[in-house]
Image (cartoon, rainbow, N blue to C red; front, top):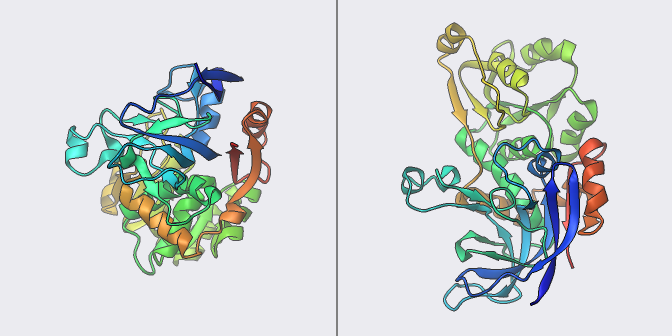
Length: 339
């Protein structure tokens, strides 16, 4: 039996490099070799035992750049091609899928979460979940998925030319939303109480930032002439911040919740109705969003070299992921490189 290396999260707080059976290429799916895997907040939550929809042990990794090893006839892909990956495997039959929203399929299975993902030597993936990369490098492909989440949120929020946009939370997902809101013509501001994270946004794009808790109300008033923002995105993963965000929305504005928490979220109904506010959830991404991100990278408007700040390999990740989970100083996106 042929074996491959895989990085396994055995239980919260415990990573181990293991030998696992080589996946079969006779399933009708495409056999691929992961080349570069982005480490996501989801992966840190899995390691820390904070993910609500996960069974251990689990091979993490859903931000993938892959090389085709073997593909069935008629799949439209060839050995040696590099692809990005849509890691959301949908059923194709439920009400969401029938309505063109496979990103919120009621039976969705996400690589690296509900089933084993890409931190392994080989993986099988449905051909329909491979995103043609149009000549992008493995590095560039590895950032497509998380940026697609931001692009999807921006599409949900219908950001238009000259909209005043506030993104709350300057982690990778928030930065993706800020970037694509800016590319959609919005005048973007970023709020993060961590000064370093707020400064990171300015390294990637032209934005105003808010980083002082004492000055938020004054800053919002100054940036919007006291009217609030046309579109607000929350990417904090913090229920208190999500509730506070309602106050930043202008009359007639839109509030998009990108992050997910287990806690109930409350808001003042009179203010919500007074503003005739639109509240939107944004989950995952669709093929349209992936294609937009690939096109933007091809156009040279996504600074991938500044987004990827940390690197490791499969064996090094055993020590590096726990370290980065506790210390994200200077970290925007870390990737695991696989030979």
